[in-house]
Length: 165
Image (cartoon, rainbow, N blue to C red; front, top):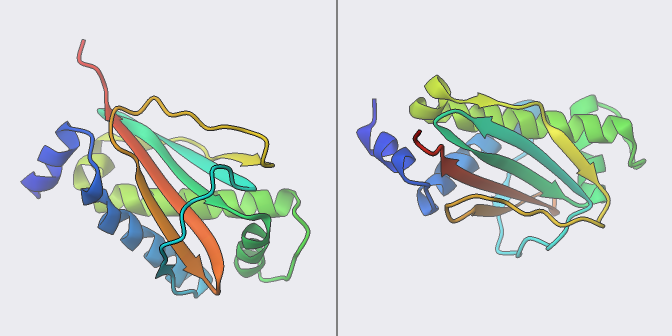
């Protein structure tokens, strides 16, 4: 077991999680969607058309987030479902929720201390641009700006340690 990762989990991480999160996303997009992801320098929007949140609970807790535009969500759903859609409907919300859940699951499995002690929640999908997301995380959030086929995608990770009783 990698003691560096375990030591990192004791304190909410920052930049050390970028490569693990990016690797998890690349794996899911490659295997499940047949798409390569590119890292881009585009800043995440303050509010996206679609946000999927997957909670992490256990000794380390937090929220994994996947954020995208409606057009990106429709493209993801089309690839996952095997049929073209440009209609931003329940199928799209479910498909993007499942992609986010898979990325969160692979991320968790890549960190032994998380995989052994933490569980993931069912994905929560928020659609529409009229909301603000606030996190109670005690660490610096990890943000990745990615792109596939020119479609923007932003991943976030806000982790904190559970208070000791």
